[in-house]
Image (cartoon, rainbow, N blue to C red; front, top):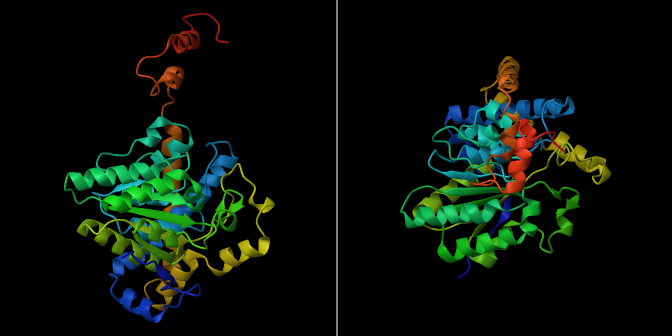
Length: 359
């Protein structure tokens, strides 16, 4: 019998900061420190993101993919993972990378075009950001297959946007995961647009999660701006995977406040009223802040103090990244071929001054 999708969109924390009845029982089971971590991490991620956009506009980093508006989806899911799990990110998962242990400075180096930004610290199981759409899904599936064959407890998680569900890699990965009951989680942040193409033009079915039925895996659709609901869904998926019950497809319905990247202009294809509704009425940080204040766990003074600390953390990371020694020019020829072909050897020699002028 095919597994059924959880067709009710899970929402435990309403946009105004009030808990639903089920949300209250979930909230009471969450340790106080984790409740605060939900908020702290979201604020830190947003602080980093906003500064990164400014850095790009100043020409200090390259084209950048903003994530503002998607903090709850990233923080809630990442905090449900452990150090033994493997993360396969797209180019927008800066928040996930931070929580997994990637230093802010190294994340910035990536956006400066430095290869060091692809290398995580020892013990941090985060793959380099995948820019080609959906290529991380089959690789996450393959890593999960290896974990199962080796009888390991690790779970693999592929992060992707709704645009990736239009790629063949999406279907191939989910099909293999279903056939072999693999410990993998496919986490889709449905922010409504594959660059400028709305989800309604990508899919004949109204949700991503319902596609899980075709591969006989679990499908969950959740309010991606509700960090509590996201965390709960991810915990369930991780538990199922570790028990050997197979893969889960999670659709976190969210919204990116800004453009697809700093090279895009979202005003050309999005209705301002739609943006206003999501940004003003459904912001993930505002609802968590309202709840914590109502519960007596957060004060206005705490908010200001934490925002200042986050700014200081980002300032330090920017200074460290910009102070990193510049790579040598022949670094352009590294990491592609084991043995350079003659033409590239000639170009490298010209660049270094060994073979005359570089043309």
